[in-house]
Length: 106
Image (cartoon, rainbow, N blue to C red; front, side, top):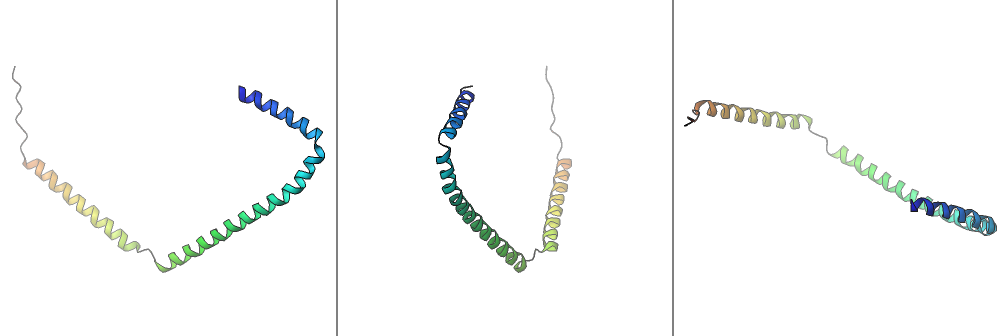
């Protein structure tokens, strides 16, 4: 609630100040907008160059190292077969091991 009241007061004071110092505000805009445009343009240019460099390095990386899809698939297939064999051996062990004799005494 205090934030709302503070915001309303700041808004009212801002409009009063804009009315009283409108010529100074225009001077500030005349000086501030070009600086903001220069800084924003420099930042956008820098980010664009970095993005272009990343795209170039990504193209070089993908062109140099093709992904061996068949090798990956074979590796996972062999791993799955290993786990299946391990599961079967565990099932056989469980079938061969007799269940513990549990008797309840009263």
